[in-house]
Length: 385
Ligand code: SF4
Image (cartoon, rainbow, N blue to C red; front, side, top):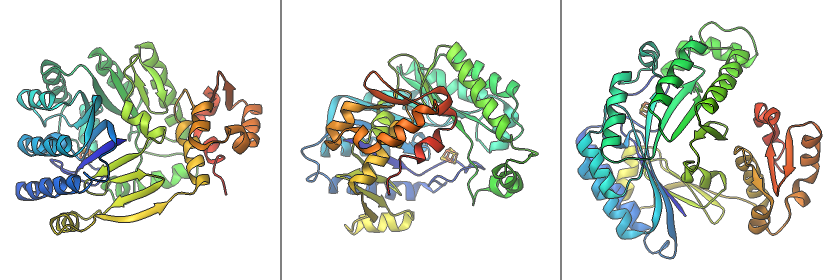
């Protein structure tokens, strides 16, 4: 089983952000810490037989939480769960939070992978995004993490930013790859309703949906072009793509994410966290006061519970699995569902194979390069009624 821990605190809200995070005062951060610990403790009995193979501390900005609180959370995790000796333990970090001292303590606590949110190496883009840091600050954070002993670092960058040109994106990629992180996530900016970005770029978002010309945001063709050129440059710099948005040095793929795409059961703790246990999807309450109050009065924080049918699970298995370049391993599908993938999806596989979008070879079913370009369309065909 995998474990996800949500830390919903940030120095300030980025203009495009729709994650569950905010700048709450230290009193609330402390109450949240204890609430989270009591949620962790509440699962001790239920998961006593399970081994945690990976832990992901996400947010928000986990490195913005006081180190002493984080230590208590880690103590609770190790006291209440059986964590595998070789577990991958990742923590998200934003430049300008964390310090050499703090990074050393995280390493000591067992964190062995750091994921730093940079998004862009261009100052004008960082400002536009409402980020709290400069590229210089990112470099300092990166070097401090290395000094503290982190030998597995991811850097997040973004494509599809307003006014982004290939010059700007390639500058970001070159500056990041120069530092040789083990892993790079290269995500497309998605503008969500309710964010300041949505209000600013609403017209462009609507025009883009209709495949029309846009002013600030790259139109669909430009976005595709940026994605392909980024893919090529990253490959040239020694990063192989193993998932639509993720690139890594050999052997440094993120195990936690791969587990998620392979539907390894996961327990999510903290505000708004989701879990997938025994084919039931649970979601925690999203309001921070309710979360804390429920934990303080020993009430369940789960507000949604959806039981997945075998058909739901098989569809999900396919469209998550196809996100990865290696695709779905036939034998693994059979081991999980006791039926061959062809018996369930034979028709749709054949159709997409004939169109050159899918390939079935070496015991796997995976998207071709052409299929990757229209991944959403192909994946949607694996939905079972
Ligand atoms: S750092 Fe991340 S979680 Fe925090 S506000 Fe910015 S985008 Fe949102």
